[in-house]
Image (tube, rainbow, N blue to C red; front, side, top):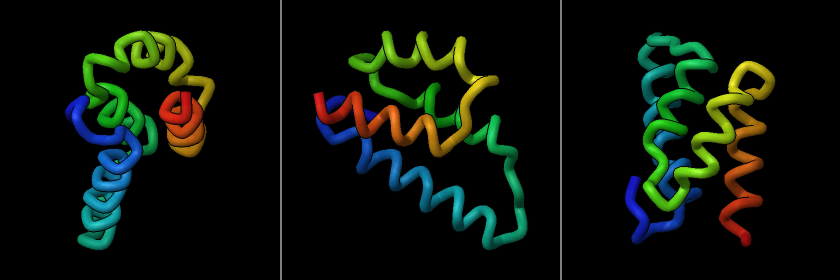
Length: 74
């Protein structure tokens, strides 16, 4: 992911890749998907990434995306 584009548009691209992977009968766990998305966040999202790494076990993929919407709107 890069700072020059909206994070959510990049997240949507990652989701499409994951859907295509699922369509090929390759299933990835939700926790792996969360790790992939948080690790690929741009440097400007470093604080969010650090916060979410500690909350990973308590939240799901939908929660991550919802929180990204909130951060993006600020």
